[in-house]
Image (tube, rainbow, N blue to C red):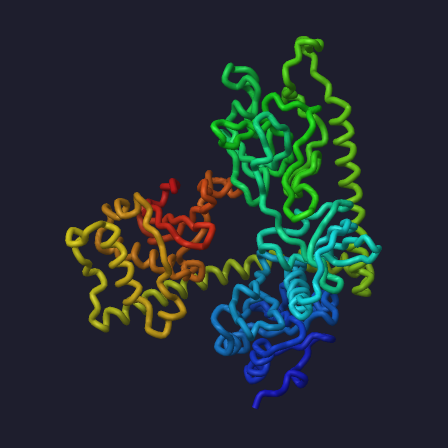
Amino acid sequence: MAAPMSELTSRMTGVRHIEAAHDVTALAEMILENRRRPLVLLSTTADGTFAFEPDLIARELGSDAEVITIATGVATFSLEQALPPKTHVFGGAARSYPADFGMDPDWRRSILRLPDRHTVDQLVEDALAQVTVSSVAASAAHRTWVGAVVERVSGASGNIAKLDNGDRVMVVADNLPPHLSLADALTEGGPVEGWLTERDLAPETAEPDFSVFQDGDTTLARAVKVTPQRAYLKLHPTGPEIPLRRRDVIPGADDGVNAELQIADVVRVGQTLRVRVVRTNGALGLSLVYVDADAALVAPLSLLRGGAPWLREGVDAEAAPAVRTSSPEVVPVQPSDDSGPAAGDGERVSAPPSSVDSMALSELRDEVRELRGAFVRLGREVRAGTDLETLDNLRDESAGLSSELHRERSLRRERDTIIAGLRQELRDARAARAGVNESKRTERGVWPTGEDWLRYEVLTTWAIRTIASDKSRHPLAEYTVGPRFVESLNTLDDGQLEKALRAIVDVVTGRVAEIPGRQLHRLREGDGGSDHYVVRADGAGCWRASIEVNAPSARRLHYWQLPGGAVELSRVVLHDDMMP
């Protein structure tokens, strides 16, 4: 009989640890039962250490959540068998289970945090958000719509606002979509409105209305992507990317003026820019040419109902360094004014006083932000009861182990690739023993269209390669066939076509990300690791998966991941073909 959770062994103060398989049954029951608070589960790495520090997480969460650790190996394997699909942890990963997880045990309600992709702060935020959701759900009948003023914006220690009566409340993201961050929506000293439940204020998103921007208006936009030929700006995070050509960015570009300037010399990703609105037959466009630095701004759109504008002049995104001084190569863009004096050769038009004030204000805000960050870090160290010298030693030790950890992960990836290949060979051998000739395909000519033929072959391949017990776990989802996809199969022989159909099945069932041999990754616009991802105008991203490995002119499968999650097959290409 499994021991009760209170009797499970503990490796560290306040955090229970599980190693024995017989203790896993009680843990699984605890995860799926109706609890009063979230449960954070952390697994060990292959060498028995933790990628996410359990003691630190326990101190950050206090009594708001239960923190439990589990050893990777027999215990995590047993847990996988006891929980619904895709809801377990292993290999250093961690996740937070909501208090009501058993009512709807969907893995998407409990985000898997991986040590090489996520941070302790993100895991803590997951648990705190689940605490908030539980509190609001219990008292939803007593909520009130109120206004407040934001006093503090901090993703790690909470966003604080002050009500009209002087009470302070915590601003929470209960009513916001997962892709929207409160840190992007709140401004210290700015307004915020939302549903007040006890001490939690939950704002709602505002629907963007682009009709407020008329032809010739001056407003603010955020640069989200820069290529040699285009700059892409947004007026709202959920709005479309508006492309600007070189002549829309650099004055006189069509006439050879400023020929030495490139778009990247003028625009950087993350910059907040003054733009001029251009309406052509009702279509919304933007320009950086002839933007009046003294014109009154049309207020940028807000992310939240009753909230402050999303963009503020002089405040760039965190990912891009703020531009503190004017570049000597960039010619300031001003509207023509025949009444004023013209700058002669060798002279530079000086920045207006408003620009100087804006830069000084930006520097001051940066200093204030750094001071606030220092206070937050100091507060954490005081709560942890650890002096700075000890923390420095721990950081040095962590840095020394970093290279070893990377080597272990590389070896694990190689091992997973080998295992995936062996599993595929085993499936093929079983099919051969069963007398199924997978290479025998129907003639395309007997089908009304090439797409009809393809869908039949995909369905047949899925039925043969997926065993009965896995058909409900990995169903063949809906997908669309791009206009060039069937044609791209014409050059494949029977063996290559069979491999391509298997890759399509892995993509459509969603298993492609679980198979290391598929080498799944997003397609980039160039060869560099920092080049932008290929994204279509409708927001779909292009992905690339391996059909063949270690073969001459190995084939790759290109497909589009649509914003709603659906798949559109694009092309089967050779290894060196990087076109979507």
